[in-house]
Length: 380
Image (tube, rainbow, N blue to C red):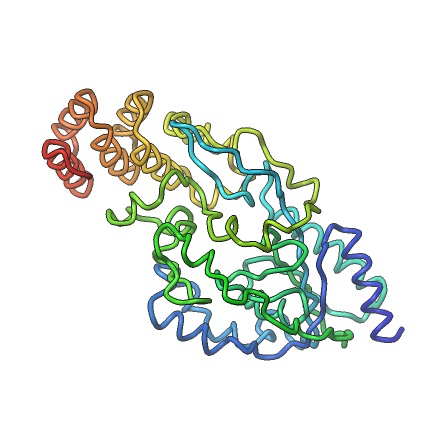
């Protein structure tokens, strides 16, 4: 079978499996590898040390699949349903995490099917499907494969789907027919994403300082969130969609989301007060198969406390006080900060009572800071 015919059949099968975007590029060093290395050297990866540890691997797709010739880049859209406003006591979750499944699991299974199809078509073929975890600069290769362009918010943009889609790839040693790279950038003079970022995480167009990004802070950062960034996080509990929501290309997008990613009604928005009352067992049962599991219970509850601190309400005092006695110091420290912002005598009493028995030095410092700010009438 000719390379164009093989490629066409593979793309047709990919579409049947729910990949609305597909394109092929040759496996070579991605053109953005030097920018990627500079981005790491400037400290913009925060504590994501695994990126620096694998920096050399990102330069060579052959480190993902030995003997690779071609890369089939794929895009699978997720929900475009409207984001509902979060009331007090609630928080927001990035729309890619609204469903009851982890997209890694769904897409991995589809990639396995696609690789199986390819092996049946060409039994001699070697291939590997990857989603999000291999050292591959997916956005660079997606642009080379004609799927779209990299926007000023550093995300891949499609004229049809905006940026609301997952990227995946199939690497193979077969010489597939390559598509033309996406020809142009359609951002123009627009600065909507740059100007809307709540934490000013964009150093310049196309350059994100991840250490200031709400998605990084709520998902990747394992320790306490810096005090100066907490008020800027608003009510985001997992991820952030601001730079995507304001993008004109997203407003023009059409909904072709896979049925597997149907939103769960309790995640748009999510009950922050309820989260703080979940035990480890309850959290596992509810979120083990969803993207929220990546942040683990301690991270999600830390984020829920900060969201409640940014939107004080009387109903938050009880769960925050409960969180002061949590087994996780990370949760206790965040609850202390949030209680100080409630400006309520019950909150101050809870802080004073916890300080009398708290043994963790970091949490004690957090409580003392919270009490000082509460007494002074300032922000914690």
